[in-house]
Image 1 (cartoon, rainbow, N blue to C red):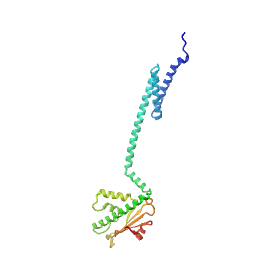
Image 2: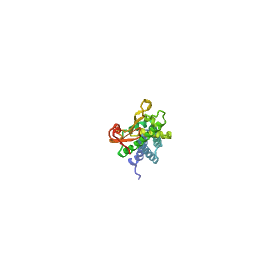
Image 3: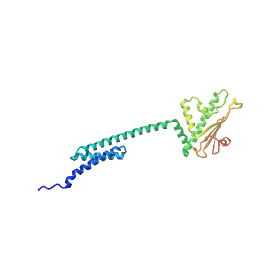
Image 4: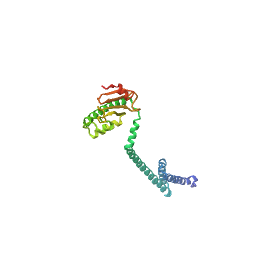
Length: 249
């Protein structure tokens, strides 16, 4: 005698199909906001699960197409989001590089660097570099006086840098100018007395003073005059160097 189907055996396929159809609709709802990455991933997972269940059940094609529509929408939005992110990153990277190459930005960073104190080892190297620059400026002064009709010295650091040492190329002059500009020392010419101003003997005073706070306290101060003798003193001022500085050997 055949047994009558129980309510559970009758409702089971229908309930499974209903659950898969609900899953497909949920996937479709999430696919609309798939541009939000977690929701997009959830839409893809639910879409694949719903499609698999609809395929394995004897049911109308409605749920299957809803699941596929959800997958298409989710994948399309995720692809657009990925392309947008890549484009935005490329644009940001290119803009950042152009920003870094901007002369005003570079000057700002250089100005910021000049406010950062140097470590002791770098400060010692900066002292040696400043001394070398002082000797170069003295050499340019001597050459300039020989080529000037009035036998006077150059009274401007900028003009000295533009003149450069005889025989140097424009590129070498620009490199020298950059070293002067980026040095943690301030170079200055004072008491410059060309003969044209009525002073009998041409003279000048060249000083190189460390920039605070970039250089530490008690850094070397250099000074020189038309004799070519370079003196130094630690601490104090450039006047102390001129009065009591010890000759650099």
